[in-house]
Length: 397
Image 1: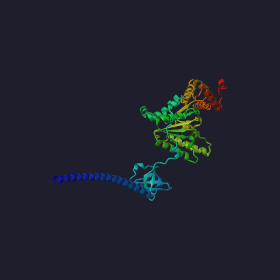
Image 2 (image 1 turned 180 degrees about the horizontal axis):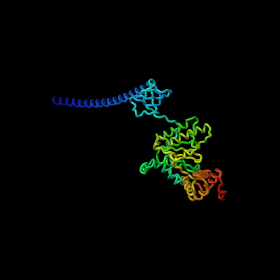
Image 3 (image 1 turned 90 degrees about the vertical axis):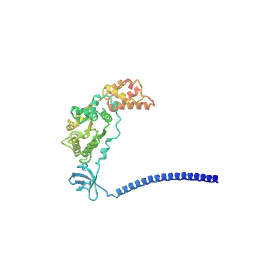
Image 4 (image 1 turned 135 degrees about the vertical axis):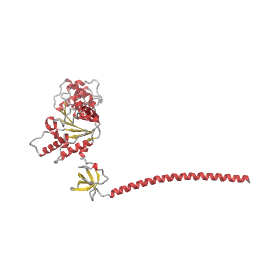
């Protein structure tokens, strides 16, 4: 009997331990399931709150836009609505008073016209498109010659942006603007691109003809917005190319179109040397016809430095030939000094065209290398297309 009782007791203990382990596993599984359900519940509650917020926004009435004319006491302001009339309205208590200044765009309640929020300033899409988002890839090594001109440009634009403390120690203000003038293709735009690449500043390029608008006052408004945009994006470089399109001399006898261009010019003169500070905005102008610019535009205080960009000399032309052909598969025995002497009265753009034409001559003959004869034929072609006389040597025949 005792042996039988012990066996039964041992079997019961084994069953009890097995049942306990089974229940423990079941409890852990239920606990894990509970935690997963809690996480899922939290996600659903968050989604519910987001949907409620979206539904609340959809139920809100539409808002009017307006412009603040004057901020009054007791939390009120005079606002000119987009519908036309002006109103004395209440300012929402959640809006800091320092944000509300004249000409600030605000959102108004549809019914009581109360100011509910401050809106960002509107920008003309044309002005936004003037910003060059991708930085220029040109560097100082891409410029042949123009050492003195490049030094003066860097002192005017690059140095004040990178080392403003130097001007503070000396006690002078950096030049406000620089005007580049010279023959077409001499490298004015290339110099500006290289400086913009080195300074890492916002680069805004404006073509002078873009500021000439059809309707009265539109050109002046565009000039104001361009300078305002440059100040907001500072440090920035504002490059006005083909400045003679709006900066030509004013005449006593002019058509209505000429008078509109003159209004745009006067707004430009005001922005260049006005009462409002420009901040870290450097102005660079470029033109091929400095002789026709208005004297008011050339005086110190607007364009403090005038940099003439001449055509390259023999040594500079040789350097430009090497720069434009450094990535080409060329004959190592090419005499660049000879090519520079033959490219008479040629600009950097002309030399670039000559190197491209030399490569095209090699492609035409299914060759993988550009020879000396290709360069000579290219010089002859570019000079002929330009209308100049070209060297008449036996190797050209």
